[in-house]
Image (cartoon, rainbow, N blue to C red; front, top):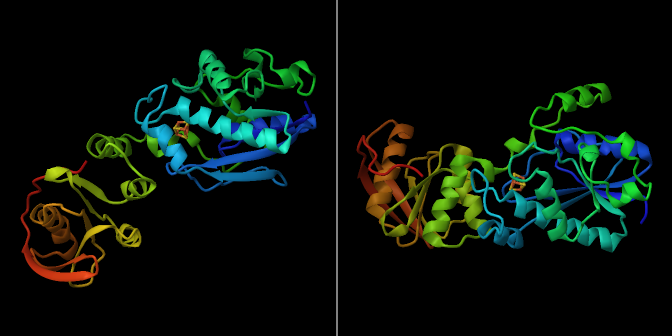
Length: 317
Ligand code: SF4
């Protein structure tokens, strides 16, 4: 084994600290960052002059989200399966590019689902990486890994952090002059209750979903109309532009007069229902109850005068 590793790097403080614990030991480190359809924060800070690689996860990653072998966490976050998937990808690169081992910034007991001793072991085993993952921040509390046994990593220079408190990490960051990092736990949409509810609705009604569906879920207010059809209304001009850019394969509804509010209904949706929801929000945006809307579908446009009611018959998801 050689003195080099792939560090799974989220850009959060723990993975930055993992880097700072290993680098002074003369280990050649490649930072590997996974971008998922649910988690793609802008990096605020990462170690300068480091070897860095990004991998964008797509359809094969979605399959893991749909049927996670180890189940979901509090929301629709299948953290164990997600990490195994990423570890397997990292292992492929490790083998192909000749790195010696994998490192992570995971902290024992920091998260209830995926950061327990037995879960660490399970993930290593399923990814085919037993003994090859150095978790620098908690290493002294975990079994010795192969790189430690072989003297490539000095265990005495690693840490014994555990639990949810991040006091030790913050003071370490201060002593190392690390600033502007983000908190990764807040970033993944799969841990967000609102997003998870919309995704669950998609799984329950459609049974399946695509990357396109996920992009749509990120925008607007979502309504489930009768006959299992979906209707989405923008909440801002940015979202309206986003919805139009997605080139929705259905019916686009927008006021004839220029406005930032846009609705998109799945093909086959009950247009009367969709217009009633749309009118409720457009009324507020246009500050009037009666106006003309355009319905655009497959390049054809028709106009309709609508009168909006004050109440909303369907609740957003
Ligand atoms: S929080 Fe999201 S990105 Fe992180 S392990 Fe869980 S599912 Fe994966």
